[in-house]
Image (cartoon, rainbow, N blue to C red; front, side, top):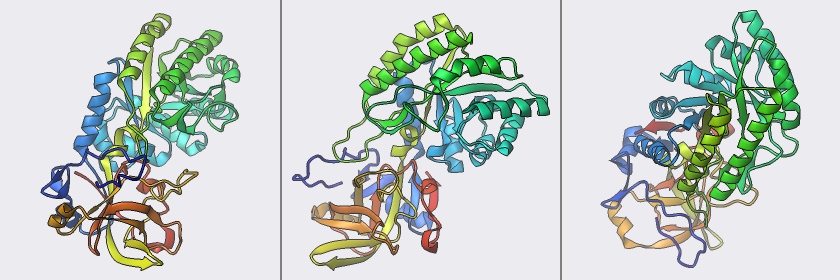
Length: 418
């Protein structure tokens, strides 16, 4: 990927997908041939070798006692979820649809947890019948679970999700601190935990999730320490023996100029220091880290094709056959306050052209009738022609499933795992 030396700061270098003989390769296959195999652009492609490598990287740096769960909401593609079932220790789902996807895999049901602040009675009934772990998010939901458990004649295992009085600083999304729709306020939790103990459910532990998409190891370690301290405090006040403590993850990946990869080694060392204290207080405790974006985000690409090249008052526009209807996040319309470019490159139809080194400042736009349909704004890219492929990196998480695919009636893109 070419970069403008005048543009500071730059995107983190994209090295996960090698370039061989001038052509970007995915899963050992040249991208132009992969496009022929898929049959049409645009499409998403996910590299299973990169999924394995990311999990191995975490296993190498986190204590062995930490259970690693995949949060399916990051990417619910069934083939990808099947692949992840062989790599991680559990799944986290956030809807009845995701529950169905998880139950279709070899993952044992006792290692599947169901979270979310608005579970319907039908979803709760399904989860109880399946035997998955429920992360209870409110007093009303706790009462509904207890009533349904009695109706079904089961004694489910649940955890109580806590809204902590702190947040994960330097995070893209802050899920704790202040008034939040997620979980039970920490100060109300001990009384609810004591009531639940006599209502026919087995309270296994707590979920404390305070933020996501952080690239700051120190901030993550501070949030983990606060989560552990709070869990010990609440368990003591409620007389609860902790068997499960889900602390989320919060690990981010670099998307934008100036961002760099998160350092995992110090986080692993920090967790290793905490585990003896936690186990001393709660000998049967299993600490769960739940991640989505960090596991799959960098393993995916979004690929579209240039269908027109035009100039308007001195600016060059590459019009492609994909856009925000497929990749809302890359367009800047999925949480960005100020739009920033994802890492993007051009893959030419004729690989020999890529050696010339010519670059140009262009905007990559989609086919939709809205000025919001932008995949790259005024970005220095290799010179492109009609028919070339445009590749958006960091597209393995919150891509297709987080996008308005029905907008303007364009066909949905393919998804492939290679």
